[in-house]
Length: 246
Image (cartoon, rainbow, N blue to C red):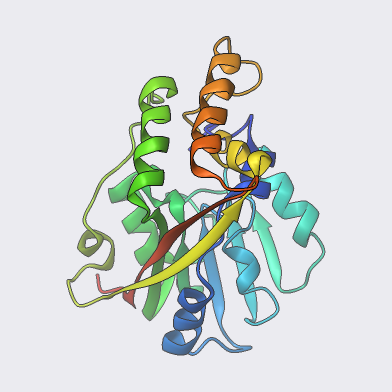
């Protein structure tokens, strides 16, 4: 994950979608999170997922390898007795063995090295510990097609570390986990639409040679889909939840 988001962490913190509230509630209800629960949030980024558990569990370890992303965690939670921010990765959390009741992972899972990450899950989870993986997707075909064309035209080359694709059964160790879907709606003005696009590791930033062309094309998409300066669309949070079984 090193340096993937070093130049756009601010946009990630400000513009990335949050996860559907009902998805977060499902984790609390199924796991039974209490003042005794210890959570390890892997690839915590700027704290989009982390924030939902702080103050409601005994301790949340927010583990993030990138310094700029981690700086947003520190601004929000440094000194909070319910959160410990750690310079670590999914493959090397630095946590004590069998110290977590629950591992949470957001969008970052597709950057993990699968075998090493799964070995680390096994090392840090308590027996019968839980794993919760959340991912957001757009569900509006018109919006997704238009934005997809922007990615096709302007995406940077992928970093040397290729995105990992593994079935969820690989991470859970079985097929009996829950898969739950939670729809949501969101509304964007021009600034937040452009910012959300630029929060991707693959899209141009202000220093890119083709940024002007990218911004103009993005504006065309926004204007074609918006009404009175706002674009409304839909998405869903996909939640995979279950006990980790080695």
